Length: 345
Image (cartoon, rainbow, N blue to C red; front, side, top):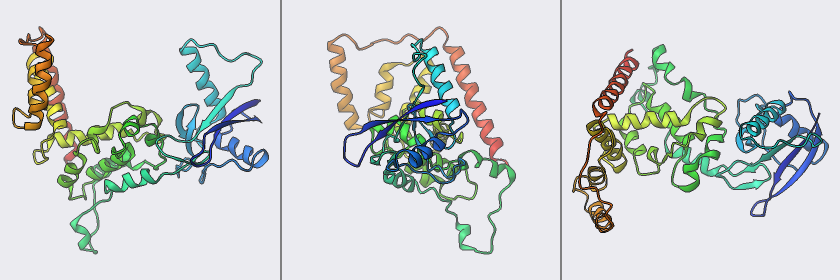
């Protein structure tokens, strides 16, 4: 069958434009197979990265029909079926019967374009290096000693160890788009892999580092895009959540506004079934009157709210507060039990 491939073309620091190629393909051909044929048979100037062609190296990551994926993993038949499903779900008019099916291909996001589908991944690698994703242990000082682990300890590393650093999650990360200081889901997934490693001895230092402002885990917007595009099921957003739980459970980690936000939210909902906005602002922003800068901020906001009649002077607990409290405590107890089981040799 014939398919139209609409490929974003661009040179560095120049406007992008779209070039269309028509290709006779089989449904089982991968997108990378199609790009190779375009380059070999129609346009040798088309630039894209590739290497293993077997979903191992992560080199051929690009945006295919609007979402980041590996060109060597996705095939034509799957992509056309996915587009048809999206069109039918959204009740959109599909393409006219006489028109050729289309597949759009563009470079990854959150990274500057070098040429066509090739992007500059310097920020991607720099942010990975910033989290220091390597096991650091005193045992390295004794070369004769082996790094022994039980099967259970090793199994905790399997999911995050599957990351091939393709950049798909980084490309789709909304937090990275709006906050250039955020290190990205790929880096934090690797960070949790180190935290989960029984051979590492720098847990407290790492948690302090990942707890810093919006550069670390608290910069995640939980949009779920990183999980949805990861070709290896690493689930970066889940690993970020695991780091957050480690931070909240570790009393040695320095108190911060994100930590107070999380703990206060849970405490207030446990008490009243929903959030008491008066206490929430005071406990989170002003740190219970200990943060002078936050107190000034809240003072100005509070005055404006009083003037406009939007300050709640009373709080009425939810009728279902006891049930909510019971549910939260059950989840907390399960989390503690799960951690105890995982920590057993």
